[in-house]
Length: 448
Image (cartoon, rainbow, N blue to C red; front, side, top):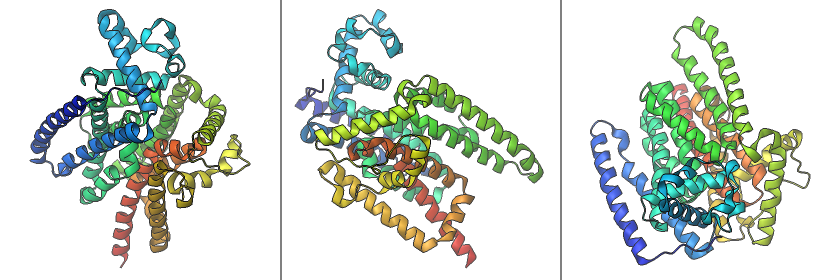
């Protein structure tokens, strides 16, 4: 299933040619935009960081780990594309099919992959990989480059709108968006995590366009639909957390835009109720079509994740963790484990919990992040929490990162899996810290 894709010297030459062509196109775009917008200062650097991350992940997969899910996505996508090309007028319908309607035994590209393709998330990733392969001459190396560019576009657009709000933090935000090693590594290769990270970036970008900047509304609306469908097909549980957080953030922004205090008090409850109701119905609709991620089955799904990742850690020498021997996946049991889940997502593995090279990176990141958070708590104390409660953007970023961090911390039970699953939470959390430091410094300066 995870056999090594054919990689030849020609693949690297072809990838180099693609990078040169992409560099020319993006540089021309950046040069044009920079004449009227200073927020494009780090555009090319961000692109190269993402490409470097994708190729780095590819090299580790091929020459160090010797396999992984990325092989399955690429190989199945390549074979699916070959199958479609044989009769494109008839077989293109596969791109619009769902797993519920598929009899995999009649498709030759699905040979020995029936169980793998039964997952809607896997099938969606395979379809995206097949589309990418159309413009890559079915090269694994070039496909990796294109995946990294897709991730770059999603993350860059989110970075861009934050720079429009906080232009004085352009450099600090650049580090937060593009210099977290785990996000670079796991969010740039041929993986589901790359697809969802890019989609989350496009979603936030589009919401900010519509609500704050009143620009590109039709494009943003289309991007919201595409990103929502993509995430719902790959990892719908992200939307369970992201959309309610976005709606709370939207409500805060709409309230801030109303100048009249009387109107604000009158309209705010109505807007809040409307957003809560719409959030509930959206989440309910997503849940009904989410298969194993259906909210009614979530307890069993979380328990299944724990069992599977624990088995993997024990049989394949990966670094596992527990949140205690008394873990149960009822609502009460999950609430009890919230502090431990936050700790494991953002601050672990600790250095003494590292048993292989792949978790060493997470240990370094977690240790640095923990010391920085402790430093902020001691330096700013109560003013830290006052700033968080007063700034709607910080509230949104922290709310999503902590809730999402809890969900992946409780479900992973394996540091290798957690390092991939947590990258949206990790990125949002670091962005929030950048804004917190800026706002707290300003507040303290204004006091003195």
